[in-house]
Length: 303
Ligand code: AP5
Image (cartoon, rainbow, N blue to C red):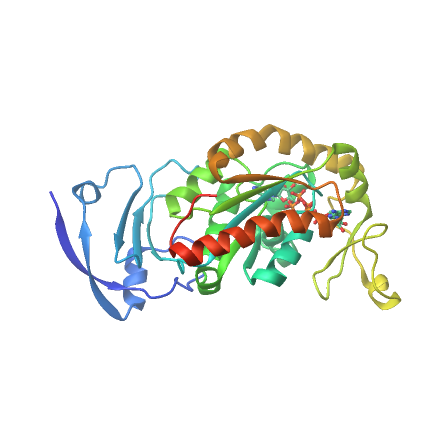
C-alpha cells in the first residue's frame, strides 16, 4: 500500500554539521514543498534501507543496522548533477592516490575527498574522534566505522561535491564501508585501482613530505620541492615510517579484495609503478572516455 506526504524539498545538501541529519531537522530548513510517494515498506519502518526518488532530485532513505555503528536515521539527499563524475581511487599505502588526485582535480575540477585527510584534520583539531582515530592510525589499522563513515558521508553531501562531482580517495576500505555508501545512495562511475610493486611502496613512504601551506605532496627523490623556502617548511606524516607502512600494507591486503569484488564491473587497474605523468595518462584516458559518455547519455554509463 502506498501513501503520500507533503514534504518540503531541500535543493542542496544539508550544511548542518550534525552527522545524524534527522528528517525533522531537515524539514525545518526547507523552503520548497514537493510531494513524495512513500512505499508501504517505508511506512512499516522495516530495518532494511529504503530509498525514494522524486524527479531525480530527492532521495529519502532510512538506514538500518547494516552499516556498523551507524544508528538508524532519516537522511534527505539532494541528488548529484547527473553529468558530474563520481570516482573512487584505491591502492596500497603510497601507491600514489593523493598524487593522482592532485592531477585529476586540476584537470577535471572534482572535489577531492580523502578519508585519511579528513581523519588527520580531526587529529590536528584535537577532537575526541581525532584522539581515538590516531590510536588506530598509529597501528596502521582501519579507524572504526562509527568515526569514519559519517565523516565521509557528510563531506559527500556538501553542495560542492554534489554539483561538481567527487573523487573519493582511500574510501571505502572495507565491505561494510562500501555497503554503507551504497545505502546512502552514493554510486561511483569508475573505481581506479593503482597497482604498485611492494618494494617501491616503502621507499615512497619514507621519502614522502607534505607542504602544510599548499597541501602538495612531495618526495625527496621523485618529486623534490621546487625551492629552499618550500623545502624548509615540509613536514612528515606520523605514520610514514618503514615499520608503520608494513602494518598499513597488511591492513590493505586484508581488505582490498572484498572492496574490489563490489566494484569489479567499473574497475580499471592502473600501473602505478611508472612516473606520475604516465600514471595520470592511463587514468585520464578512462576519465575522458567517461566524460564523453556522460555528455552523450546525460546519465549513468557502463565503462
Ligand atoms: P591514508 O592517508 O589514506 O594513507 P594510505 O592509504 O596509506 O595512502 P597514502 O596517503 O600513504 O599514500 P597515497 O597512495 O596517497 O600516495 P601519495 O600520492 O601520497 O590513510 C592513513 C590512515 O588513515 C590509514 O592507515 C587508516 O588508519 C586511516 N584511514 C584512512 N582511510 C580510512 C578508511 N576508509 N577507513 C578506516 N580508516 C582509514 O604518494 C606517496 C609518495 O610517493 C609521495 O612522496 C609521492 O611524491 C610519491 N609518488 C607518488 N606517485 C609516484 C610515482 N608515480 N612515481 C614516483 N613517486 C611517486
